[in-house]
Length: 393
Image (tube, rainbow, N blue to C red):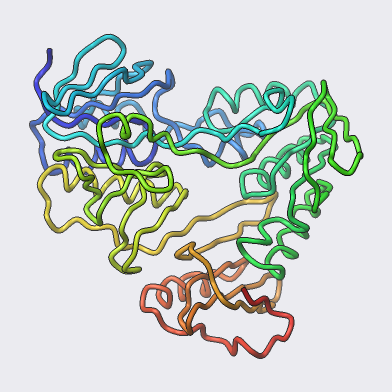
């Protein structure tokens, strides 16, 4: 058995962020990252974009030298079998690893398409998934992408750029309509269609048979490749097994990323974390926020009492050549207004008179200002009643 130190379960941005932050504060203690993945830590954002388009194979999160220089041991192909919180031992890949602090950064898994034949559809979460999808795209002439979240839109655009005839299908009339409103949904629809992909909205999938997607309307769409981008499910089973508090399937943590179990922290997609600026718990599934939470978890595990999660969640998404940026608390709005710019747009979101979100395309100043306004709880810098076409929720 090895010397106790920090054990991180998961090699995504939260896990690697935790390991790095802990190492900065504890230069001597062992730091180990355990992952069931057999690939060295990699970035997921390129998988639906540059990697899928065949423009790069380099998706490493950091060079291996980065881990070596920091004496962070990454143990691959080591699924966790058991956590003994009384003895502070993790059993993974048949080996026992003692810990003084444990960070659960186990992420999430793709939610299967809940229809007959749904298992036939490809998924996109891991690098192995991306390899399979890219290989299938090489041989395919047509594709159906199910689900118009940002991953679905990105993948549909990337497949279309490879010359495939792509149909993106989703229950909403426009991409992200429920989450972002009708005005934003219309603009996202235009960006998707500008890549050459076709959007079919307001439909439900009945079944998948062979290479055919059957809609509940009776329409059948046939394609060489079928991808389901239908959301994720947090990997919270390990936490549940050791008595960590869960809510909505996610691990409940405070602003320091501490759980209710002594010495156990959590961060990333698997966490329901308290944000000090928002003043309430949030559930986010963004790459940078997972990294930020991981750094807080690692710092807290190392004894840093000042580390707290306080940033405004946000991310960038690229649909074809268009980069869309979003900052928001992510728990709703009561009205929004779209403002057109030369070659772009901004959508401002308010709740109870305070800015709670901003979505931009070719409007970086608004994106930066939006983050400040959201953090300060100030109103949007536009007349929210001026545009009678704005959405209200």
